[in-house]
Amino acid sequence: TGRISLRRTGTYAGAPVAGFVTALHIPAHQNYATGTVYLRKEGTREVTLTRNEGSCPALVSDTACTATGPEVCTEGPETRIIDGVSVTASCWAWSRPFTCQRITQASDCSDLENGGKCTFLRDECLDDPQSGPCQVTTKVYKCPVPTPPSTGPKQYICGDDVYCIDGECEPVEREASTEFKDAVVGLHALGQANAEFDPDTLTLFSGKRQTCHKPVFGLVNCCAGKASGLITTAAGAAAIAGGPVAIAALATPFLTMFMCSNDEKLLDVQDRMGMCHKLGEYCSDKVLGICTSKKTAYCCFESKLSRILQEQGRPQINKPWGSAKKETCKGFTLDEFSRLDLSVMDFTEVYAEFVDAAKLPDEIETSRQIQERIKAYYDAKKSK
Image (tube, rainbow, N blue to C red; front, side, top):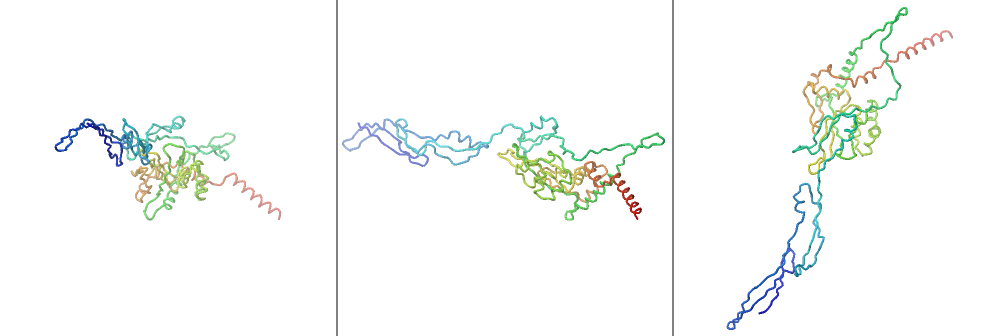
């Protein structure tokens, strides 16, 4: 009877592994006539290496996780003693980096909700396309538009002229006429139609699609617009004529701080002039299907009157606006414009501008100038 120890080598994951050990107790029986030796195996002990993937399979199958680098060995190569057996492996432990996105409930509407000046209107889902419950929702509020402080002197309108005879005075009531302002609007509309007629497409009052962006969460907001207060047509027109520098000077100040584009600053000025119609918002950037940045789309027109004609004319001829993501701001065809009824439209926004443009000279100042010229004429005659 003898004891024989055998050392064998195996292969694990493509690399040779030493230490695959078998120890045998062998009783020997010999046939002396033939010289043959019979061996009988009584027991075996072996060590097997098994790769443990840990949490990696769960991360690989998670659609919200993405591998961000290759697998890196953190322990090895080295030889270790396991159950008294010497085992050598090229790597005993490793790491694999992942980045995972997790959805948490959040809102940045607290200022509007708690301010007390705004009224909630509706929810708009930014998922495009929406699959199941909405992931990101925009809450739309109606808020008063801030108006710039007046720098000019106060003006007063005194009603009721007074007519007196022998100390008895009676007020002379005058009925205001709306025909003049309606006529001015009509003439101006015809003038704008001539100026904005596109002979290539045979359309009138076409607009230009413009957008601005805002991350779903964060301080950056390149879509201030009317929320920053209105500006006069004259001031806006002067800035637009002056180019990017003048536009940046008149635009909402934090647009420059946020490094918003020149087009976004121009949109800010045009919207505050009342020349743009807001189409809505849509998701512009996503991470793992979740909206992270949104764009607000507008149709901006050549004048405030053009915008009013589009807003109030489209419902008359059943021509709805398209979605915020696809609307191209086309104008009216000649047939569509001919079917518009201007008499039922509300042009209150532009009345003041037309009246300012058609103001007559101040009566008192004109009377004073006439008197001075008459006096100067007679003084000149007397001196001769």
